[in-house]
Amino acid sequence: MNQFNNPFESHTVDDVMRHLAAEAALRALPQFDEDLIPFETHADTARAGFIGLAIARASLTAVVRNRFQDAFAHEKVLSAAKYLRLVEDGPCKSILERALDAQTHTNPILLLERILDTFGEFSLGDMVDLAGKRNDNLPKPSPDFFDGPERNFVLPDIHSTGEAFFWQELAEASGLQAAWRFWRDWYTAFYSRSPLDWELQRRVALIEDDIWDSGPEAVADEIERIQARYLADKFPLVETVDLNPDTGKFRATPTPVENAPLMSALLTQISDNLEDAMARHNGVTENSSEARKIRRVVNRYGNDPQQAELTLTTVAKNLRRQLHETHELPDSSDNIALLNSVEDGVRGIRANHPEVAANREQLAQIAFKELNPEDRETLEKAAPVLSAISEGAMAEDFAEDIPELINDALLPLPSGAPKLPGADASTRVFNRVSKMALLVDKTKKGLQKGAEAFDSDLVKTIRLAGVTVGLGAGAVGFLYKLVEIGLRMLGVI
Image (cartoon, rainbow, N blue to C red; front, side, top):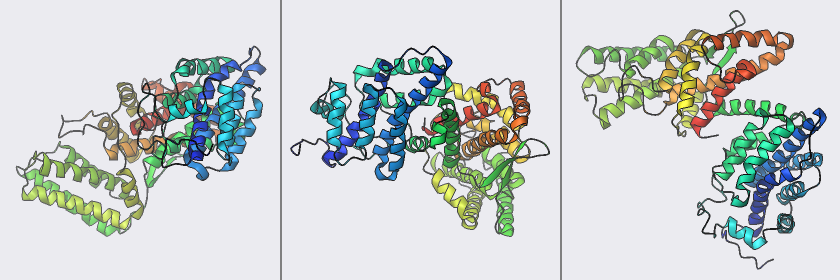
């Protein structure tokens, strides 16, 4: 075995063996339908759900451990292996047990050979040829096969039809449909060679044992919470979202302003320069996007450094583009003074609020995707609902941010909304929706007896707006549906 020809020159043979074992864990899932037995009673369907979950967990854990190596705890690998005891002996269980063991074993090549004995149709050389993409029928490898964010697992065509059939069989055998949606998307993503975001996969693999022990629906609920927390992390806002106990509506409480006199002076200067620019023939009008955003900052965000920074950063970018790139605005002294004052405002806020500056660095790394038509329609219907169940500045923000998010501008491009969603609108909408979903979830659990009445009030408001998406799971289902839109816009799912 020491003479093994390694096609991945920068990695050890053991690296390759562990990677191939993880790939085998993915390829094993369609073989699970061969292990299924007829499920006719309620006890049988419940057991089918737990068995399917054990299979899915083991496969996920193998690929996540392979991706993160020692940064993913060995104990979690052992827990996933222990959970496999629920599964009847068969090819699928055998492959997964060895694939998990290979991730921490000192001799992974031995375990891979045993895996291939179970598969039957592949020799070790065949498997390496496939993974090395020497086969002309397979796409060529990306240069970051092992270390990049989209590490490619190769799933041969022999199981391409079995993939869909497997999840359908599992849903029918367990009597559950929605509980397997994440897993179906997760697995299909590997077939399209575009794995779901690795950090999201890691967080799912770290779900606590007691939740796994509660079954597929409990895990599905926890995955929704993980997705909401992940989205809130990706769109950071320095503010607190809670429910007003007097009104039952959501509200946002901003972080306190540091150096309030400076903040006031900066906003006054921006406001004065805006008036000067609009008073003369400078191309800046009352209805321009920049004027509306500046007025929003001055009138609404004077005590909210996070929202002021978000909005003013967008204004500064738009002004620079129109002055120096497209020349839609003349580089007059009034316009230059307006741009300078907006940039001074942004710098002043960041200098006095380090957490706001840190959030800006994170947001600068985000590449947004365009919304698909279905998501745009859902957001359009959601706008009045989110405003109705919120209050104060938060309600006003939803009413203004969502039209911008779906490019329903007051004026046509380019002086209206940008082609892709802006960071300020996207951040406010999806951070807040994520926190609202988690808050409703937590509140319903805390209320216990009063949970149905609490949820019913929110659902009633949602239905009045003509929105039905996600209402099967109550108000929290509606909010989690919006969370998924945010994750798609980020390219996470």
